Image (cartoon, rainbow, N blue to C red):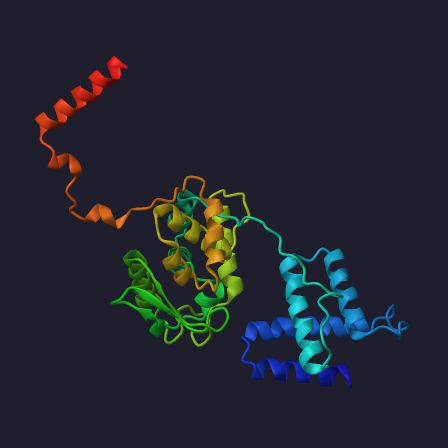
Length: 310
């Protein structure tokens, strides 16, 4: 079967499985690069190689080319779909083990740095975007897909539709963020999409959002690498340090597993887990209140005398 036909079948499978457009685009590009690798001059002579042999060699090459773990891990997932569902070949995890995740701590900003970035941004649209990303913890992809109707003004929340993993969720936002959103809508008058490009009929691009965050940090002299996900990590860390419980934070951020949420505790050196027992809210009579002061004093004297005699 020709590569073009396989690619068409592959893309059709992803569409029928209802993958997000961004995922379809990324996976399809991976398969295109893989086909190009398989048909390259150095691989044409290796006629005895199986598809999985090519897949293994391709993934190793990607690592050697300096690609990140997340990129190679995405390639891995894309190739599994090609083998299993398009070529009908069983994938061998022993021959090609999935790359282990790197346990790197995410980059975060201090509350002072966040404040500087927001207050130092003069453009109302850009300021609103920075504030919304930080105070909601949503992903940049979720931000650019927001419609005006997804902002519930009276309940102070956002309706995130088909976020990562194709899941909807409700995200609470503070009143100050709503004030900025109202001001932005009144000034820019978007029609349907909350954040629009130069043409009001198109959504704002993720690359534009990345540029806003990068420039806002650079203007304030922040030397560390700041991106949109850095604001999401900062949101989670600052919430934990402020006392937000992990279950609520998990729902806000749209994590599937609470282990992902718990991992942010490592970024909170001053965070101390406290347990407040519900018994503290009950009016229980202390045994000390049941004993008269005179009786208690006499008992203590008797114990003291017995100790002295010993």
